[in-house]
Length: 264
Length: 271
Image (tube, chains in turn green, cyan):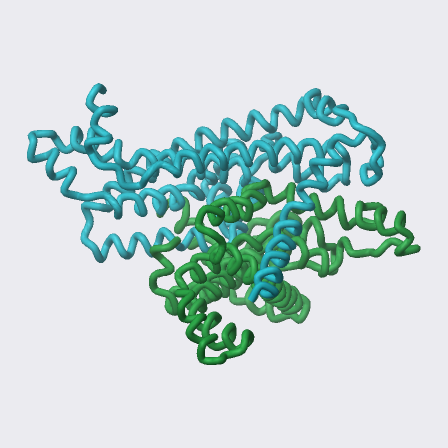
C-alpha cells in the first residue's frame, strides 16, 4: 500500500516543482513557476467555480437529504433497512450510467424538452445541458446518498424524548428543529457535508459529460493538463493544491468528530 | 403533528422519485423501438441484440472481469494479511496505520489516477490492463483493510489464545479459528472490491494504454460520441447487475455478526 499509494503521491508533489520538458514529460529544473501560474485569474476561476459548485451541491443535498434521513430514522424499525437499501441502490449503479441518464433527460431533443413541448408548455427547448445547472443536478444526484447515510446515523441516535420535552416546554416546531434537533445531529451534518463536498470538488465525470467548455472544474483541468496539454508539472501542481484543500476539510471533520474514524 | 408527518413522507418520496426516475426512464426507453430515443415507438429488444453482437463491447466486458477478479484477489490477500498482522503491533502503531488507511479513502479519485499514472510512466511500465489491475488493487487495499479491521475489533482475542492453549500452532489457530470467524468480512470485502473495480472509471482512464478498454471506459466513449438507444440498454443491464450484487452482499451481511464458536465449529471441524 505504501508503494502504490504514498509513493505516487510523493511523486506528484515532487513533479509539481519541476519544469515541463519540450515534448511533454518534465525536466529536472526546480521552480515554483507552476504554483505561480495557478494564480492566473483563469485558473483561480476554475478553482472558484469548483468551490461554488461543490458548496451548492452540498447545500442542496443537505436540504433534500435531511427530511429523508429524518423520516427514515423515525420510521418503524422494520422499514428502516428497506428505506436505506432504496437509497443505496442508485448509489451502487455505475456513475457513468447515472450521469448519462441526465444527458438523456436534459438535452435539447431529450425527454424533458420532448414532454414539455408535447404538453404545449414550451415552444422552444430549454437549454440546460452543458451549463452549470446541469453539472449541479448531476452532482446532487450522484452524491445525495453520501448525505443521507451519515444524517440517518446521527438522527437515529437522537432521543425523541428530547424533542417531546422541547414541545412540552412550548417550543414551536421551527425552534424545536433549530435549537434541539439540528444542534444534536451536528456531527452527522458535518460528516454528510464533507462526504458530499470532497468528491464534488474533485469531480471529473459530471462536469466532463454534463458541463461544457465554460463549466470546467478542477478535475477537468487536471485531466486536460495531463492528457491533452501534457504539462505534467503544472497538472501536478493543480492536483496537489486540490488535495491540500480536501485534506484540510477532512482534518477539520476528524477534529470535530473523533469517532468519525471508527464509523468509516 | 399529522400534517408534519405527511410533509416528511412526501419529501422522502420526492427524494426517492428524484433518485429513481432517471434510472427508470433509461431502463424504460431501452425497450424503445425508435432510434430517436426520447419518443416512444413500441416495444423492441433490438438494442439488446445490437449489444450482443458488438465485438468491442464484449471484449471490454471480458477485460473488466479479468481486471476485477485479479485485482480483487491481490487486494484481498494483501489486505487480509495486513489487517491480521496489524493485531501484533502496538496500539499506537495500529492507530497510525488506521489513520493512514483512511487517507486514500478521502482524497479525490482523480488524484489516485494521476499519481498512479505518473508512477507507471516513471518506472517505464507500459500502460495497459496490467497497470489498471495494479491501480485497482491499490485503490481497494485500504477498503479491504477497513472492513477487516472493523470485524477484527469485534472478535474476542481469547478465542485464538484458547486455541493456542489447546496446542494449536499459530497457523492452525489462524486457519481454524480466526479465519472462519473473519469469513463474513472477507466475503463482504471481496464483493465490495470487485464492485468497485467493475465500476471504476477514473483510475482506469488514467492508467489505461492503447487497446486495453474496460467496460466503464467503453461506456464513456459511447456516451461521449452521443446519445444512442444502445447505451440505454447497456445501462439497464448494468443497473440490474449492480442490484443483483447488492442483493447478494446484503444477504451475506445479514448473517449475525457475533456467532458463538459452538455455532461455527460444526462447519470447520470437518475440514
